[in-house]
Figure 1: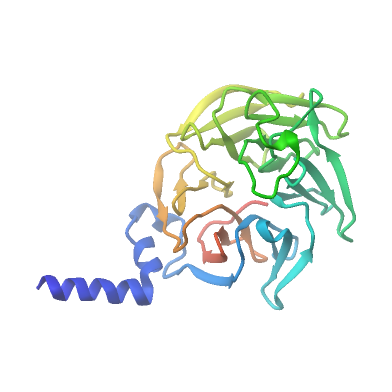
Figure 2: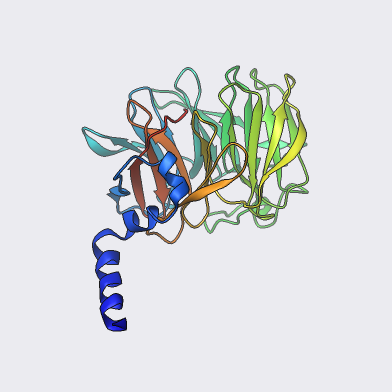
Length: 305
């Protein structure tokens, strides 16, 4: 009998491991489309990160070690959008469809126009280089929030990159005119993923080092107040849907409702699940960058940009 069940499990793992695991968490029924399976839509990369969606539903993401930004088009497939790309990590579209990038080759924030012109926006704070901007989120008025943890890269060769340049791993806000940068969080061990609500009132930040995700009130001057624990999990990238559910990458995709209650985990068959966004024209597909691949799964709920 034991041999039978072991063989049956192996067959399930081989032919439908992902969908089998997704179905284990009953809380996901409210989010995942009925019968939906996690699909691998593109592979062969070195390490994928920073997915974002354009107005047509196409996905842009980074293949950071290969120093390029990729584009996934549901009709045309995969292509290279920009190479080299400053070792870009997290990305975000502003209202004019410029791509903002955490270009950590030289610890900078870039703005990339639709015709691929690159502009370095900022690279220092208090006269010191950033540690390595990792992820960012832009408000409807153009204010930019970004996390600045320290993950030493094997491609760094500058003296200031061999040890942490800043005195701490913080979170920053840059004003819409790009003239003012302030540190808005200074008490996290290793901030990483970041996302705000569509109404611009609340910001969520994942502290990977502290293994917690925090919730803040956004103020007109860019400052953050009313810090509150959202959930007892910190991870990599994160996003939010129109129902207020938070999607957090750590050992797969962990989904929490707006109160911080965990609904379940979408298992991803890769060594690391890095980041995610919503895509397709209806924003009802969740795209996940995980190690060497890009994945997709259909949802019942609509995502945000």
